[in-house]
Image (cartoon, rainbow, N blue to C red; front, side):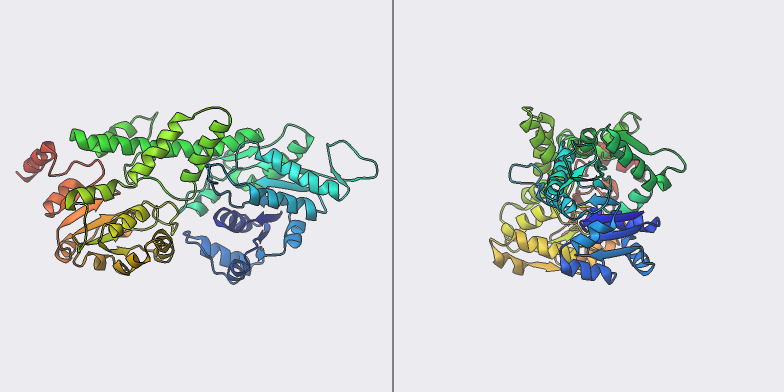
Length: 481
């Protein structure tokens, strides 16, 4: 099929490339000329495992191309995906200006029948607004949409809007797209909606060979499904973080609680890990947007308000532990940090908890040495933005290619991202390079008893440590005997 993707950011690039890999003829549109030049030369501007190879292969085979030419891109696609950003506005609502601009461009340049697919995460009712924006542009050209009241002398075109939210995890987006657990299609019940549904079933037929993965619903239901899914996952994270904080006060190991909860099939293990809070481009803005939608409908959405509040507080949890241990003035002290990205297998620094912690350490007078396997460049840009008000702090921040180097002379090591490269370090070497054998583990990578055996003072999130758990000490003694 002839496919156009409007927006070559994270969602658009993954969607377009994967559809090209399935044999479709794909054109990706973006107005950033530098990005398009890079993509056409096979240079991918984001880190996503497996994506680089797919882009290069499909460029060479002629199934994928990138352009800044709006008219050419819209003319190309029988199916046009809108995959532009919907960033949060000051009140938390989603900014739809890019999506509606894309819709207007479609109406301005379309010369044949089109299925328009909202791939961006958008509030309930956006499909109707996109349809109206397209219709308005067509009417100015003397063209009516099929199914609308006829006007004398007007030409007619078919154009239907489908809501098809993405469910891609950063770090596993290619796998998620190529092996989806569900494909949500929101369509209208009229003739145009059913025509569009047929086109989408043809497009996604390769994913349904073994069993049907497609869920068909109304456009509004599909739009809410995306927000509801992300909000539920964010809720699980915040709930576990609150339980972890309570566990510390009770002398309970949150890992035991997690296993006890997760073994219940009604609950499951996913997204039950305590840590330093969620980040990234999706959960923070989607929770805010859904909360704002509730307010606009006269509902307070109290659970979502609590989820967001707990998450913001949790981002400070490791910093609070450091300050409780060393005091509020960290002048003359040095700290090593493992991990910058908000999660492993991505270089995304949006809403990353590491930003809160590193900025807090620097503002308290400390020096900070950091490492991340892939997010060094995006991390530097993000931290420069965070320190714009006090630029002199930048001189106390250093970036290192070897994770062991950040331990040199540091009073403690802070773990902010659970990269695989950090899971099995040489603890003897790590201890010898640190000024103190002290670890603040924001991702619970290590077992407290193992840390005690390695002679580290260890502070996790809701983990029993040798300092505050007589049960753990007794268990260690029994093991030793």
